[in-house]
Image 1: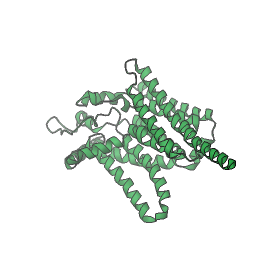
Image 2: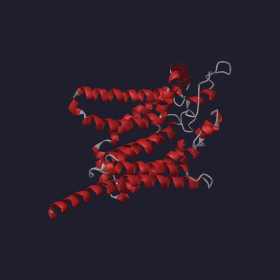
Image 3: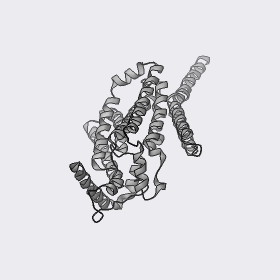
Image 4: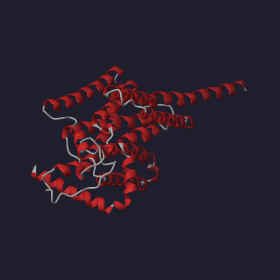
Length: 352
């Protein structure tokens, strides 16, 4: 434990160094950490893919959901501190030499720190997207492949810097998030896994989701039985965050589990889509944009004054319905329009 405390102490000085060196780039780093927030990716970026390709959206959704689930479970198991509260709780520093790290509204996340959810989810998301781009640009030779990989790792570097700059994560938490993200990407992009899930009946896929939920509940209650408060990170964030209004319930592990379960259940009902008709982008993109706007509005009107059960149930249903809509309604309407158009053209040609 002494070695562990010593290492975290060194990493605090790394954070202070990053905050000093990159202070003039704070706006850029804030934009990076906001853009690659798992919630923002899930609500604003990933749905756009649904308007471009149903099969790619399905693949991306499966990878991101399983990665976020793994992140939630590992966070609960490791139960590691975030820098902004560890610094104030540790005995590695005395009251005379305890440094102070900069924090703002992006710092105060009420969940355990290891592994970084930003890095783990972004690694998987970018891995899927860049794999598709690399395959598409293969005809341009090695230069295109090297360029894509340079952009990929540069993006992960800047996300890591942004998370350290705002005191959200230690360096090792960022590195561990990247490594786990790459591992989950390899597993989730395995054709065997996707084919296996797709071959299962809807009832069996729903059964798998239920098993995952039971595993999460078991982990939650096991901590309680061991005398560990599963919500300890929320209390630490409230204790050491400079402004409690910075804290958002949507960044807690419990809410993450609710959000992920709603979306994963929708994917289980529809099933991974390995083959789909091309979408009419002129229809699908406006449709997806309108749905995204409506989803953000619906989230803003989440009932917060009727108890935790109503709050979580509303959120669960919302994520289930919109994920189902992106998987089922968008291809049904956009691709269906193409079919009707081709039929009309054939009818006209025959009449002529």
